Amino acid sequence: MVTLKNFINGGDSKLHELTPDFENQLWKAADKLRKKVEVHQYKYIVLGLIFLRYLSYAFYERRNELKKLFSNKESNYYIEDVKLREAALEDEDYYLEAGVLYIPEEARWDYLESNANQPNIAEIIENAIEILEKKYPKQLQDVIPKVYLNSTLDHYDMAYLINLFSKIDFGYDHKARDIFGRIYEYFLGKFTEVEGKRGGKFYTPRSLTKLIVEVLDINGGRMFDPACGSGGFFVSAIEKLEKEGIDKFNLQIYGQDSDPMAWKLTKMNLVIRGVEGDIRVGDSYHDDKFYDMRFDFVTSNPPFNDSEWGAERIKPEDPRLRINGAKVHVPPNSNANYMWILHFIYHLAPNGKAGFVMANGSLSAGGVEGKIRKAIIKADLVYGIVACPPKLFYNVSLPVSLWFVRKKKPEHMREKVLFVNAKDLYTPISRRQNVMTDEHIAKIVEKFRLFEKGELDKIDEVGFTKVATLEEIAKNGYVLTPGRYVGVKLNLDDESFDEKMRVYSEELSKLLKDEEELKTKIKEVFDALGYKLEV
Image (cartoon, rainbow, N blue to C red; front, top):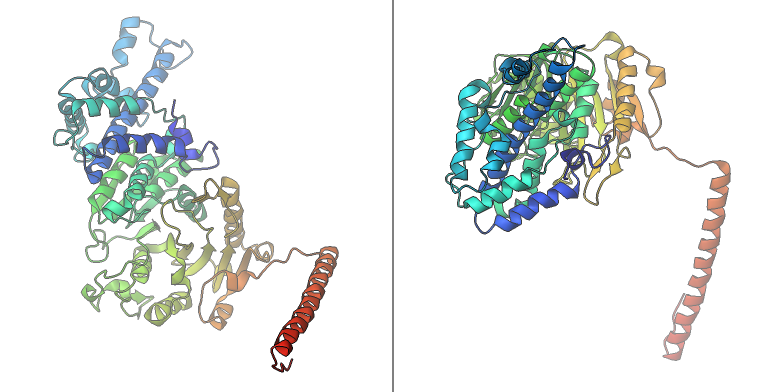
C-alpha cells in the first residue's frame, strides 16, 4: 500500500517531503489520462478526489476510535446498549468535538468506491461535493473543485482514479502535513513547460514553515499570511500548538492570496485540521483585504523577484511607505521583494513579530531597495537573518534567506542582529532536493532562544552564528548577508596543516620541475626551426 506518510516524510519522521513512490503513482495516472484531459484540469480532478478521500479517511479513523470508546466500560463514552452504540456512531457531535467532519453516507469514499463503475460516477462525485457543501457551507462552499461532470474523462477513467486513490494510507500523523499544497506543487512542477507556472508558488517547504513558526514561538493570538499559498505556515502553527498542549482555537488565522486556487488549498488544509480562518482572495499589493488590521505574527513566502507588479499604482501617501514615520520610496517595478517586506512590517502589531522567506538578492540589493533596507535596519526592526541551504524548494533552485523582524525589541536585543549561516544544515533526499531535519531546526532555534534570553556570550560560533551590532552592519554598507558576519571556520589542527603543506610542497616542486623541462623542450624545437627563443 502507498502510504502518504512516506509520501510526505520521505520514509523518515524527521524529513517532511515527498518520496518518488507516490509521485510515480500520481504521474502514472496523469500520463495514462493526459490525452483525454487538459493538464490544468487534471490537477483539479486529482485534488478534489484526494480531498474527498481524506475527509472519509479522517471520518472512519474517528469512527473506529468511537467504536472502541463506546464498548469500553472504563471509558466516559461507554454505551451499554448495542443498538444505541450504532446510533451514536451517526451522531455528528462526536466527530466535530474531535475536529473531524461528519460525512453523510452518500459522500463517503466507500460509497464512491462501490459505485466507481457506474456510468454516472461523475454525477455521483459532484453530488457528494454538494452534500458536503450544504452540510458545511462555511467551511466547504466552493472549496472542492467541481470539474467532474464537465470533464472529458469517461466513467472508466474515473473508476481508475478512485481505485488508485483508495490505496492511499494517509498515516497516523496526517494532520501535521500540508498534503494538498505539496500535491499541487508536484503538478505545477510536472506541468511547468505546458502551463508556464513556477513551482513553489503554493507550497513552502515544511522545514522552512516549521523553522519560522518555532523561531517566532507562535502560541496564540492573531496570525497573518498575505501570500498564504496552500496555508503551510498555518499548518505548522497549529501543529506547534497541539504539540505543546495549547488550545489551537487560541490562534486566529487570517490569510490572503491573489490566486483563487490558493484560497481553496488553504481552506482544505484548515478544514482537515478542524479549524477556521478568515481567508480572502485579492492582490495584496493593491487590494489589501486587511488594511486596517495589525497582527501578532506575520509569516509568508511571497513570490520571489516579482516584476511588473504595478509599482506605479502605489500612491505616495500609502502608509506602507513609512518606516517609523520616515517616508521611503516605492520599490522598483522590476522587483517587488521590498514591497512585500514593507507590507509585512506595516501589518505588525506594536509587539508583533514577522518571519518570512526572501530571495538572497534582497540582502544586498542596491538602489532604492538598498535605501529601504538601510531605513529598516536603522529603525532597528530586523533581529535575525538566516541563510538557508540550497535546493530546499521542490521546483526552484533559487537560494533563499529568512528574515525575522519585530516592532519592539527587548533592551538587550536593541541595535543587534543575529546572523545564522545554515547553508550546511541539510540532508539530501534526492539529487534535486534537500531538507532540514528537526535537529537542524532545533540548532537554529536554540541560538534565537539564547538571543531572546540575553545570553549573548553563548551565541557566537565562527562560521555559523554571530550577533552583530548596527554599527558593524553600517560599516558593511547595510548588507545583511550572514557570511559577512559569521566568518569562516577552518577545521585545521597543526598536524593536518603540516601534512597538507607537505603534500602541497611536493606537488608544487613537481610542477615547477615539469615547467623547466617543458621550457627546455620548447626552446630546442624553436632552435631546430632556426628561431632564437629568449626564455
